[in-house]
Image (tube, rainbow, N blue to C red):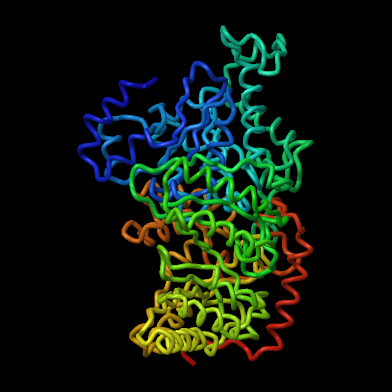
Length: 630
């Protein structure tokens, strides 16, 4: 252990005073431990949520093993601590560290954040601060790690621009190693050590580069390096190379400050998904996690064009892995972990082109081993009518479906062409095969929503409950899970306004009042947290000040109900002078420049404009939306 002294202090002085100490000690099965003296670079992957959430994230395992397959890099992990652990670190003035070697974060070459959810932004500041890294990018010098970020939220990087040195947009398997290598070359060339007289490619540093180690303003040289990376990689966004622009008092994106920096950052794309190795020895957590199973990504992208869905646009193009690749990876993962469940991951798993063959192969291989195969993302279509025959209740007896809305004309308007007849037929088959619980995901607050759209959610749940009782002879559970629609960047609805808290609360009340069956549960997402998510998702660079103020006021782990304190955020936003009304509830004109337009998507903005116009035309043909209580 390279940092035995710190580990001893943590084990003796901190762990006895916190809950679930096993999440802070590392040493898990399949964790990779390398001698830092034998590698060129050190990367710490930081997930801005707790261990139980971060260890359930498949992308973290993918990047971890992609970097650790290389002999010249050590890749380690860190997660946001619970408040009790944070308090003990601060009390004893101990740094936050990586799980593999107990190395303080400030000692890494690169610290990389996965921005999966907007409400995790304050946790980024917690990790940086506890790790000894200045929270603001402008305060970092050559001595500090490169702080990078990727993930879905990187497609509107502006709210976190003051804290992140560099955003990697798009797929990370090839982009992350490229950025890490380039940063190390710059660092080694400018600050050659006694054992590193040449850069990683064997070139001796120039006299100017050798002299650079004595430049007194390390922050200036750091900015030069970041600018070089922005010019080198089309998928890299360096906020310090751009300045915000306003038009008519509203944010209108950013513009480059230097020549050679792209006006629009294009996402990195892995062309051959099947050629990218899957993590077949995933780390097995020390404690029970939200997703405690093997995860195998079978497909990336989605063949459908749902207008509310950000993943549909930012994950294109559609790519597949071969059946043999998937089955072999699943076998190897099972042998390396001993898990009793395998989850097949995709935005729409049942749209995998060889789905029937894949499911039969998986069942033939794993049912004799008493290993369940789960399919968490099912498309409701004609195939769904027969799909239930391919599923089993070996370990689960519930289905999760996402009809999103209940009526056909609204489905056409949001771009999700599914049919209720297919949904009901598939549910009947599932009940006949032993399933007795169905969870339905809906959204409320969509553009053009009417009271009958809300009523239809409960009507659909009652139809399924009635069918389940008829087939099984006893009640089945139907859960109506309702989220509040947020018009996300890079979707056709990005120009639309979000519904008000009054509207959303009235919609929830209507749904609950309409429920009559005791076997139907109605669960609605918290309105205040949805509104806050909207501000963080749609905000511009000025929102960064509010994030910092909220963190200083104690904001931590806001995605956890027991820790969420929306009032802190509304106060911070007010103190920072953020016009929440404009961000959330004022629509943009179709020709307006948006705060995130400098981040590109594969289809281009013209595609989004076309889909927005088509949706508006379809909405105009529907009866007008009215308040739910009318």
